[in-house]
Image 1 (tube, rainbow, N blue to C red):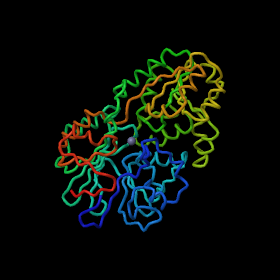
Image 2: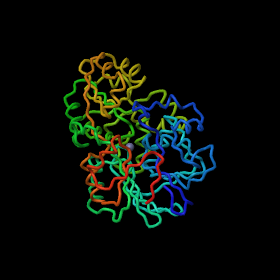
Image 3: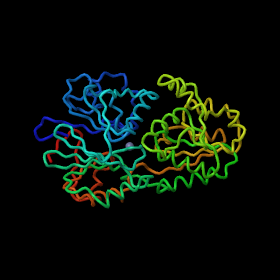
Image 4: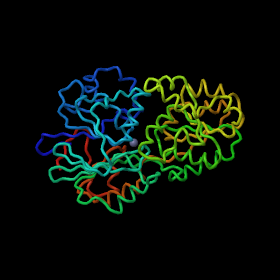
Length: 415
Ligand SMILES: [Zn+2]
């Protein structure tokens, strides 16, 4: 965004694409060794002058809506002198990902904003709104400058654990919005079997309550709503949730945003130590290894009562080559896949589990708003124009609202 004077430019989110221009999953590994100039030339990085490490910085600030890779995956290329604004929860997740996943974001010039508290970046006034999304502490932004008001939704939904946030926004909408920039991930996508997080929690409970052997739950450790659903189902079923050190660290870091976030020292949670995680954590702070030790669980303990163990899992080397061999054959083990179905289609996990006689069930609800909620938000905010983003079907926005302005990448639009 640029102010009328042309002096101040503001960037919202600098994400890594989920799909390539040909529509296949985007493979960062194919590009990661290229110099920035090449990444720009090949249009992998968006063409924004004065944003990147190798350029003279001329962007006033970058604001980040939430900690998903498709929103901050290219932050590593931002010039270190440009301030980065984000919520506390988002910053915590970026720090965790820097440590464990090597996302390489320089947070030296990061600034924390508080939800619903306006802050200024030169000619812009920005008010963050806490939104319901699968990433915790996700924000939408009301951005005001030169008498114009733009509302950027970020990613959001109305069927998660914080669904009240959307209800409140609809009940007392922001007035005089000139431009609504709204995501539409669910346009053209199947809504699936489970309408909300409550349905997901119940379905997980139904699976684990009657289990006579291990349950493996495949879920992102940064999807806080889902971890809470799993934790609640485990607690209700009187079972034990086994998490890894990485997850313990994520929950610990996010503990500062809410006291309702499950923690390693809660009664139903135990922590499994993997060497690679312990090594990473020690790099950050060795004391953490001692801190989480009080909840440490060993293989023998897990094997003693398999029917009680709900093991948070990732489809990786550790699960395939260490966890399963360590636990040995155990008839009746089941796996719950609690992530977007599209990810499952990219792996041979179903075949792998089947070859180990582990039954797979999918229990998931989207992190993105249903079409009905998109329509409600657009009609309630009643902006002068609506710009589609974060969607495969911008041409379908016409069924949601009247004044759609469909923009191509890099196209300039004057409000
Ligand atoms: Zn997201």
